[in-house]
Length: 254
Picture 1 (cartoon, rainbow, N blue to C red):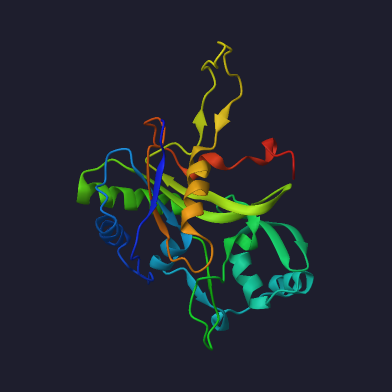
Picture 2 (cartoon, rainbow, N blue to C red):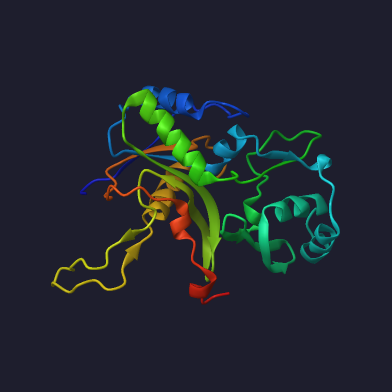
C-alpha cells in the first residue's frame, strides 16, 4: 500500500427502520462516482445499522427495575435510561456521577453499554435512545453478502462506533462489526527491516479502519455515516469483531 483513500458517500438520507442499507450504499456510490472494486471496504456508522434494525427505544415505554433505580442514584442518570443500559449489560464495572462503565453482552467495555441519545431522533415531546445492533458481526456479514449478490464484488464491511479509552482522553472510532477482512492481523513470524522475526506483533486492523473513517464521518451534524475505503492492506482471511475482545484472563486493567 502506498495510498489509502477514504470517501464519505453523499446524499445519505435519514435511515429508518427496515430501510435497505445496501440500496442506500449503492445510490451513495453512484452519486460519489465510485465503482465498487474487489478489496474495497465500506464503513457504516453504528447508528444507521441500529436504526434500520429497529433498535430505537422510547423511554416512556420503559419500566425501571430495582437495579436500574439504584444505578440511577449512583450515576445521577435517568432511571429509564439506566434500565436500557442494563438490558445490554453483562457486568457493571464502574459508576460515578454522570458515567456508567459496563461490559456489554457483546463483550465491549464502554460507557452506557453503547446506548446513545445523540443523532437518534428529532427533539420533540418523546425521548428516544438507540441500542447497539443485537449482533453487529451478523449485520456486517448479511450486508456484505447482499452487496456481493448485487455487485459481484468481494468487499469488506466494518461497522464502527465511538468509544472512549482507558488511560487516554478523547473518544475514537472502533469496530463493533466486521465481515470480509480480519479484525486483527497477526504479524508474528514476519521479519522487520533488519531481519528480526516479530514475536508479539498483532495489529488492530478493523479498529484502524474504523478510526480513520470516523475522521470523515464526523461526530455532530455532518450526516456522513457511510465511508468508502480503498487501498487497505489486508489478508484474505475473513474475520469478526469478536477477535478484538480481550478475555478477562488477559485483561490486566480490570
